[in-house]
Structures are given as C-alpha cells and as structure tokens.
Amino acid sequence: MPMQMSGPLAALDKWQPDRCSMAMALDVVGTKSAMLLLREAFYGTTRFDGFVRRVGITEAVAAKRLKELVEHGLLEKRPYREPGSRTRYEYVLTEMGNALLPVVVALMQWGDTYLRDDGGPLRVVAAETGEPVSVRVAPSGAESLGPEGLAVRINRKG
Image (cartoon, rainbow, N blue to C red; front, side, top):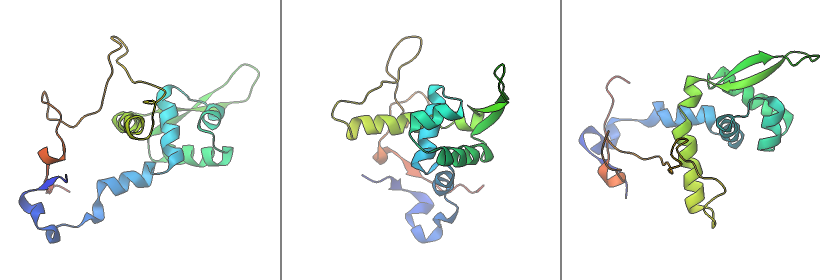
C-alpha cells in the first residue's frame, strides 16, 4: 500500500522530485561496490587490501570507490605505517558514514528476509544483551508504522 499523500502532496503537479534527497544519496552510495565497501567498514575493515579481498572487487574499482567515499565525506583516509614499511592509508567511517548504519542494516535484513531461504548468514544483535535489532519507521516511543501510517509533506525550507 503506498504512502498516503496528504496536504499539498495530494496535487502532484505542485512539486517536482528534481531535488530529491534519495536521488542525491544514490549518486553517492548507489553502486554495489560502494555499499559493500561501507558494509565492510561497519564490520571493521580499514585497510585497502582487506576491502579488496572481502568485497571481491578489483584494486582499481576499490581505489576509485574508496576515493569517492572519502571525497563525499563518508570515509576518512588516515595514514599508518608498520615498522619497516612505507606509509599506507586506512579508511575509517566518519560521522556521515556512520549515519548510514540503519540503511546498511535495513538492506541486509531485507535481503535476509526476502532473498534467502536460510534467513541469512549473520544476525545483527545488541552487543550487551545479544538481543536482535531491527530498523523500523516509527515516531519516538511508538510502534512501527507501515506505509499506510505515513504521510509526506513538502519541506518549505528545501
């Protein structure tokens, strides 16, 4: 069931999706390799060779995507040096990158639910309690809402 269009959105000719935040976000993270690099960053991968190995992409693709994620502010490139080696760089999530955690978890859990027969290889749980966690859409302190419980309104600031 689609989201209800209330108020000014009931007349779709009064607004255009030309400055759509979703389209802008997909310009940044909309490739499979970008999302899988972010997944690995959340799992704790920081080094270039680890990203290449774990994501299963070429060094050229990894270099390009990591550079883009750094340029967009999702990852920070930090120098490190092991004894006897040249300076190398590791990639660490920024505040902006960390803000994508709900997106990454939701996409993973959607895939576990709808694309896997076995429920998926991993479960995301609270570190302290081991309780499963999930991403949901809800007002603070309230139950989850489905599309029928949502409305979209024009943000006059944008």
